[in-house]
Length: 64
Image 1 (cartoon, rainbow, N blue to C red):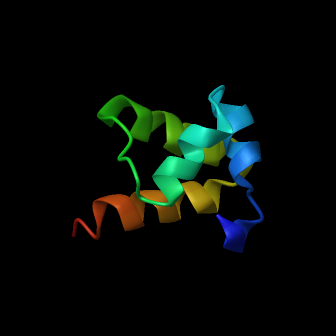
Image 2: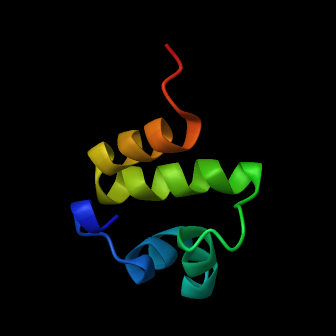
């Protein structure tokens, strides 16, 4: 997220969740639920579409 200038707070606000939730995901203290993965991707897409693509690539791996 740093690469794309997206703060944890900005992502949390865009998603409508607490920054503490985003912080736990970033620090890998908790994995987001399956439906939340989609919400993260959509929020990132609103903030920066390239960041959303990178998130999917990093989270799901290269599916080629």
